[in-house]
Image: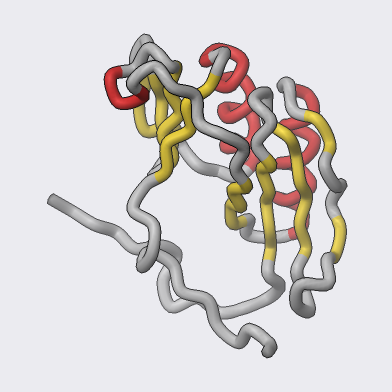
Length: 142
C-alpha cells in the first residue's frame, strides 16, 4: 500500500513525556523545535510545552511522580534542509544519533533523521516529499 495523502489534527490531542532532567530536556527540545520552526507554548518550574507535546518532571502534578517509558515521536519538517537542521541542533544539545538524515524505504520521498533524547526517546523529523497542503495547519480558537 502506498500512502497517497496524509491528514493531521485527527488522532492525537496531546502527548506528555515525564523526564528525569527537565533542564537537559529543555535544552534539547528548544534546539530541535527552533530548527523545526515550532515556538514554545509555555513553561513553568515543573514542565514546558511545544504545541501538543508537554514535557514535565516527575514533580509535576500530572506526572504523579512517575517517569514515562521510551517513546518514538516523529515531527513534520517542511523540507530536507529542516530535517538536517533538526539533526545538527539535537546532536549539539544533548541528543545522540539514531540515524542521520537520509531517505528511508517507508515510502518514496520519505526523508528523515532520528535522535535519542536525554531520556532515551527516539525523536524523528520527517519530510514526506513535495506535496500540496490544503492548509499549513489546523487552527483552533476558543
